[in-house]
Image 1 (cartoon, each protein chain N blue to C red):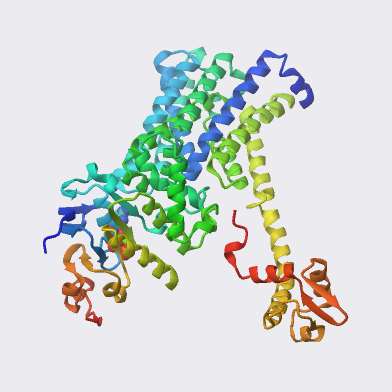
Image 2: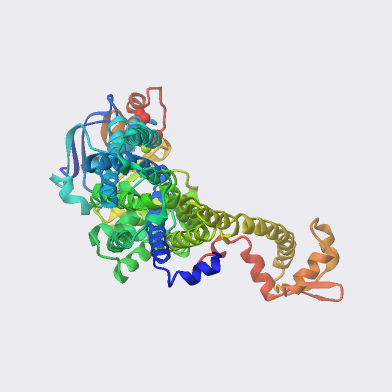
Amino acid sequence: MTISEYFSLIFSDYTLRTITLGTAVLGAVTGMLGSFAVLRKQSLLGDAISHAALPGIALAFLITGAKDSNMLLLGALVSGLIGTFWIRGIIKKTHLKSDTALGLILSLFFGFGMLLLTFIQKQPNANQAGLDKYLFGQAATLVESDVWLMTIVTAICLFVLLLFWKEFKMLLFDADYTKTLGFNTKLIDVLITSFIVLAIVLGLQTVGVVLMSAMLLAPAAAARQWTNSLSVMVFLAALFGAFSGVFGTAISASQNNLSTGPVIVIVAGVFVLISFVFSPSRGLLFKQIRFIKNRRDLELHKTLAFMFHIAETHDNISHPHAIKILNNFQGYTKNTLQKLVDKNYVTIVGDHWSLTEQGFKTASNLYNQQNENNE
Amino acid sequence: MKQKIAVQVDDLTVAYNYKPVLWDIDLEIPEGVLMAIVGPNGAGKSTLIKSILGILKPIAGSISVYGKPYEKQRSLVAYVPQKGSVDWDFPTTALDVVMMGTYGSLGWIKRPGQKEKKAALEALEKVGMLPFKNRQISQLSGGQQQRIFLARALVQDASIYFMDEPFQGVDASTEIAIINILKALRKAGKTVIVVHHDLQTVPEYFDWVTFLNVKKIATGPVKDIFNDDNLTKTYGINYKVSIQE
Ligand SMILES: Nc1ncnc2c1ncn2[C@@H]1O[C@H](COP(=O)(O)OP(=O)(O)OP(=O)(O)O)[C@@H](O)[C@H]1O
Ligand SMILES: [Mg+2]
């Protein structure tokens, strides 16, 4: 199947449509919530939560003896939440650094989860096969009810996000200040964190424990490059996440059995890469271009400023001066003078130059930080 | 002269780990003073402010504002944190940050409207930052960021202002602009409490002072207690400042 075949099949093939919708919704919700994790500098949080969920999956299987995906996710949710709130507790009570606490819980829970998985695999129960799909995810196992669940959670999450937008935003920027205004910051924090846990747990089946945190971070990191507004960032992160889901599924479906989770993550990674290079304000490419342009403009501006200081000494700013004076100025070349004429900053009559109205204005603004690029 | 007490701190003891960083602080701040809190690095000045404002939970002690527990009087109190306490690369604009000052009176869920925006713009005007209202906050200089924080507190329209080093890293003209705003607040009957490092300017800027170094060394009118004796007790070295009487 080629990619174009895939896109025509989306509308007719039920399974393909389910998987595509599922990964798109998942990408959107993790991207959205990932913005909050990234801005709180809790990049490791997603990793810790997803790894902390593993023992819950194994225990849920051991207790129920069945591979009902809802029960397993419930187990994942419980142990993910326990892990997360232990992390919070450890940071609060012991004054360990947060990355230490995150790393500790991550490896402890993951280790315990792996232990349980190997134990389960040794059991004679034929049912056990395939639990390890939660390690790397298997989008092909998504069914319609899974997608419904994801959609409902996403909708609730979106609703809560819009409802408490102002509180979330303020908490992210300045938690202490939020507290002094009388808001219950713990409540806001628990709300955000719980949604992050929920989104991660929902993604485990598709993307897996190991790569799940990339779904949280990559779209948000990419989105941050394109905007300086929180709302736009959250929206873009959701969009990038959804596209990663769709393209990832498309590529893996068309390349015969490529594992979906890793492909989705790689697509998200490509979004990050493109964003880091091409974003207009923060991207490396435009930074370089701006740098070169600035350097070129600088020569021009220096000459203009030199002329401005001469013109300033006369009441009439357009008073003509001999071009010869400019020879005293190091940066001056015929070329720059011509450029200034082209830009309509300077006019030349015979061997005399004079500043235009526009040239005078530009020159006097050169030193004024305030008028430059505000708005 | 018996003034009304704006803030009263009783037996306040605060610890981050085991060893308290503030010991048994008693403090009465009269209404309408412009007070400096001075003390060496690590003396617990920020900790004192944070404990009064309920950001930190003390081991012991109580805080009251105009005779009632602080929790009931939050709307009377505004806070200017140390500039370095937040990430200035956060995706938002100067106006947005100042607008946060109105969130307390708005309460949960309700969005800021025209009235709040107008208040925020006025505050920006007061601190001379109106031309920067739409600027991304990471593109502001340190002194400009400091003024944004000040504007955010002004929007709260409180009775008592706590400011943690508002003069940190600002140039001379910004310092004058800020102190004029503080003096205007005092003139309007507000109480202003400022963590301050530049001892030379204490007598010029402030009328009240608290010396702090883990314990409270002294508190009172600048003209009575701002002397070498208290400075030496607080800073531990022989301190000499000349105070113009
Ligand atoms: N989050 C924290 N965890 C542990 N100890 C802390 C914490 N914050 C401050 N301390 C300690 O508490 C003491 C008081 O700190 P505080 O920040 O209140 O001092 P300060 O007087 O504001 O100093 P500065 O002039 O440097 O701002 C210091 O010894 C500091 O090391
Ligand atoms: Mg401090």
